[in-house]
Length: 140
Image (cartoon, rainbow, N blue to C red):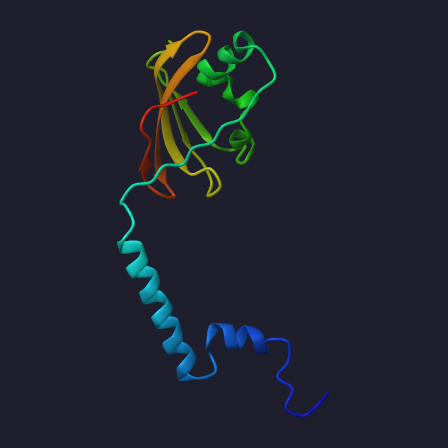
């Protein structure tokens, strides 16, 4: 080994600024810039996703409209097999599904607020943990 070689952590040490005060000061400036930038952004944001399913709406609608059937197709259901599930009303409009699971799925609640077969389902989604958030009712 060459004398003065700092090992494989040299770049990591430099990036994190653990080797002198100049680097720690640089991190503070970066944090300040991020906070200033964040302060200029809106308080709310919108995330929207879409996908296409190659099946007629008549086949898909019953799987989404019945919250108790989500376990058959939802990938989140498989993230925590021990997740506690509670179902409220069973009628499509007003049906409620609450869950409480590990860090991967968290805790939350969803409610079908409107359903028009075979094309529209409106769901209100509330996240309780690991972060709090509420969606405006969204159509599927």
